[in-house]
Length: 371
Image (cartoon, rainbow, N blue to C red; front, top):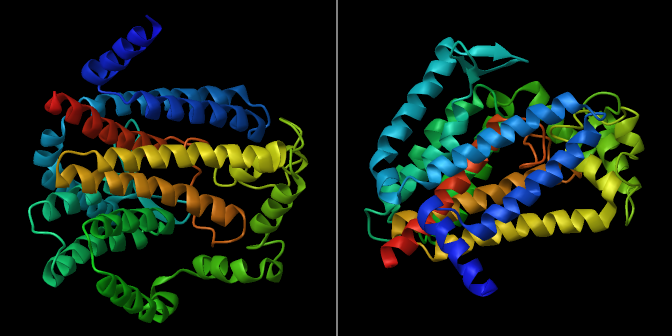
């Protein structure tokens, strides 16, 4: 009877709520871990904890809403969503609100909105929409057109400046091309072309603080109280956690305010110090399961549009985790990307959960079509 009851519950979730039980459970568990770590990282602030819980509720509501939207509806609206995203990015440059040296937001009266977040979804949707209407693997002209589609929003976000978001937007588009069967020769040629433009980026497009981050990656001690301070304190916190960690609420680097940005970009260092190597491996295993589940959904998708979109969204989530863990560990430059579902903040969390809502829609609607 228990097996029958479980099957009925799964059927209800898939047919009526359009939710994938395994993915939903993993995301809920990850959100719970995030609240536990945030309480410690925020100096046991119940206010921050309550605000994060509200943001989580909004994010899960967005996921649930998008899960109800069928892939065919997403396909029809894709060009318009992409066009609206581009228009808003241009408006940011013209009438956007500035803060902390960047112009990234539109003031909508009741709240500020960051249009770059839309492109994390709109760009892979657009490329998947375009390539699903072409014979695959794509030809050279099709690849060049896709690269133009990737370059336009990426450039608009870079000049805000927002290097972290531009990296994710660019990666989400390139993943669609990769999954479409892009030939290795073209990929290697593109990498070589990108490498050849590095001097242009360094001398003409990158800001001084971005150059400092890259130089600090190779030698944090060159400016230990300035640009290298974050990395030095972060690596100390990670290393001091040892195998089993110092225990929840017992991290010295975070609790004694040595670690900057400890509840946002560098919250992974707080987790590592308090839960140690064992906790880190468990957290990474949870992330790996979520990514693997997303890729599995992509392999089971019913058509090319859904396969390309689902695969790109899953791999973009991997980039979130990889870049944040890499930069906090001192292996990558600091680009200001949060740790998904763990870092304090709402905008990126809503975008991430919206992506998982699309993944669930692709998976559950496929089952309905098949039945």
